[in-house]
Image 1 (tube, rainbow, N blue to C red):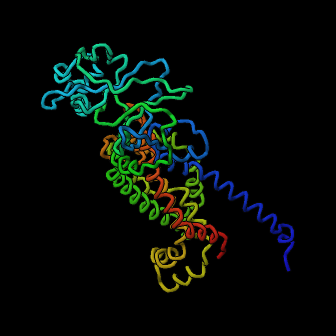
Image 2 (cartoon, rainbow, N blue to C red):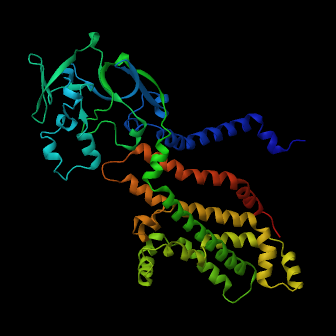
Image 3 (tube, rainbow, N blue to C red):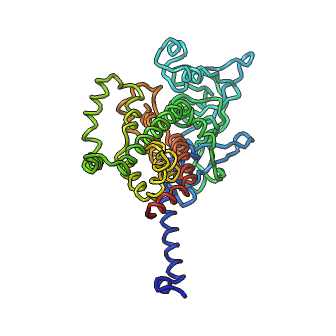
Length: 443
């Protein structure tokens, strides 16, 4: 016969509760979905306002036909209706030699100047010194002026070269947009964008109407290996795992020992000492942050990993309280029987209490691991050298690097950073539920 509670909450009520929980779960899942979706986008689409739900989570890829070939392209900029532009090619030279260098279209001086300068990186010099031959198209604009009467192109560097006209760019009928598009390559995920201050002449490009662009869904899995390389993932993971293992082991061992003493060993002042231990939970970290730092500095441990794991070997007040409460719920007859058999307190702890307390000990280890894995402030205070950085510090350093944040790579690295926590939670979920359920069992 159904109980009163079951009659009051029928299947309609249970269905409503489950639907509310499902909707709430999906709502809290959205940030993770957004992070994963952003990690698969190109940089130029990470900060764009989405036009619909699909573009909010999926990147849009563009394809165009350039010189008779199909290319995946990126939209570089809109060509204004009042712009006068021509597409030209250098006239063939004897022996197929270069007509000029690519940097001459962007800089007001030539190779004789930039080759002697120390202001440019090796990658920039490589782009600037790229040869422009008769097979390469050039956009003639206000910087590189084309004279239709003489067929000459005046480069920004001051050099004048003979060119052949490919076509003049004219606005399409009906006011349709024109886009300057450039070939997109997978290696572009490691840059701030395809467009750079120096023209990459080895890329196919063209000016096409908006209707000539074909769209589709675009995902870039290459963001992940690039992001992991940029954040020095292997080194940071090694540092983080070392701290996690030392902290988990120290916290579990010390907290179990202290909790057993508070639960089962009678000694003068036990209640007062336990109350004082609980009182330390209420002291905010910011209050003791500077004194603790000064103490470690006096010992000479700043700039090392020791301040981040040595303290865990002195127990955690919260976990001591949690373990003690669990231990008090264990059957005392088992402990008394072990004492009658001549077991010492350590033998009772290891052979009786620990096997019965595996769920709660696993929960303590899990929470300690999660806290150490995510810890940012501790490593920030005590670690000085980049080779010591944990994953959280490496992500922060990557996010604040000079030149702007590559959000697509940052989200890829953050996804990998979060993945072990999600996997660990699902594997430990049964143990966690069991530990909570067993706290209600009385000895």
